[in-house]
Length: 233
Ligand code: HEM
Image (cartoon, rainbow, N blue to C red; front, top):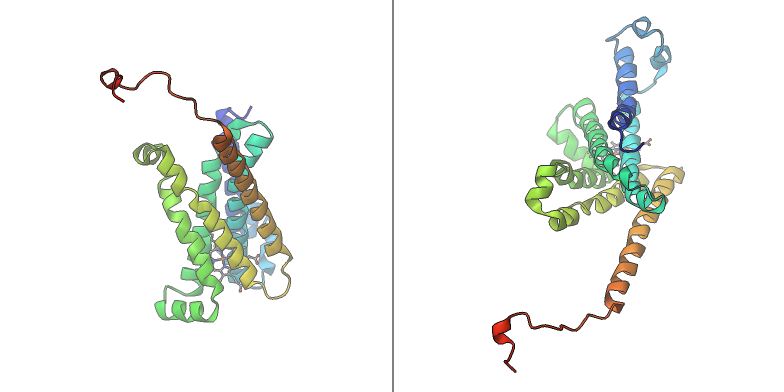
């Protein structure tokens, strides 16, 4: 089932659904579309008190969710013995970057109107923005090198090492979220716990593998590597 190509299309559409929902609401709120044109589906969109805040929070939430989905693929495929889940990891990672970019653009364009002075003032006033920015910048090389061509060019080992940056990105994302909330820390703590469990799983698997590797005695060589040196002391 997980190997079906239509399933990939369905999952892709599901990943895009939050964006479609947001675009529909935004189009109604900003008066680009009459609610009737969408069958009245987004009528309630009119009551959004602060559209800018709504878009920022919506895109920020989906960025952190997709980061968690991406990190969850490896543990789930191993624990549930579903190796084909790997087919969705790159998609989730790219959607995390997509929603992160929408989130950043909301700040850059709708909030700061590309005004560098205003941006710097905001970064000085709200230092959590720097943590968010770090999380997004860390995702950039991962998005660029997510293709098969880049895996070939870098080689599996180097590619895997580079893609471990996603761990730092997720940590920076959680720090950003925790830092920005004023009173109710329940959601950032929830995401922090999820990221911690997913990273801990990897640390445990790595430690067990490393311990096993060291505990396995290296087989003594039975034949010399090069025949011409066989009789040398
Ligand atoms: C991986 C990157 C990022 C993640 C995971 C992330 C996540 C989040 C989350 C979860 C929220 C809170 C949403 C809510 O309360 O429902 C948020 C809010 C926010 N983020 Fe980000 N963010 C990221 C990058 C950025 C960047 C690059 C910027 C700007 C340069 C930024 C600026 C903001 C702002 C201004 C808020 C609203 C703060 C407020 O309520 O006062 N974020 N972000």
